[in-house]
Image 1 (cartoon, rainbow, N blue to C red):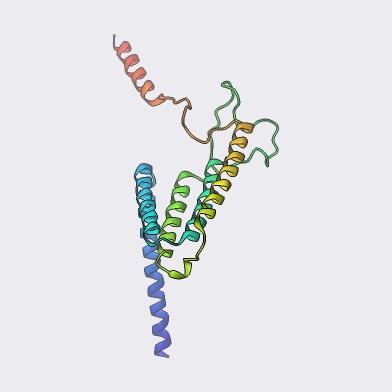
Image 2 (cartoon, one colour):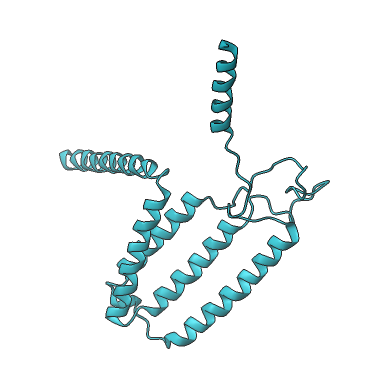
Length: 197
């Protein structure tokens, strides 16, 4: 009877330790949210390590192909709007088409942080898989690479046609920026100075 109770206590302690680790991990993950550049630099270093590992062992091409398909799937979610205009019936256009239209920001189906987190996890898992020989399936890698490039080209063509049809740009490049905070503070200081006169 004591052995059973001791096993329950041990499993409860293990579960409690796992919860503490999970909270701590989430805490530090949340702290990285505003530091997008550093997050992507870290992921870039991880990508470099993975590429170096695959080059060094000259294998695991099927793992790399699966990783590439997964990243392509994530990229489509990152470039797509949250509400697809093709699927959602509406009375008018969902996105502004003229300068006089109401401003509606582009909201992604897959936000940048989740995009980064999913890619980073995928590279970590793929990197760990390269240490197990059962995942090293012999394939002729040039065919996989050509097939992935064809798939990438067709998918991006479809996505770009969708962007052109519904007139949206998923990036901030070339979009008008407003410096409201700085102008209003400068304007309020000049107006307070004129009141003092």
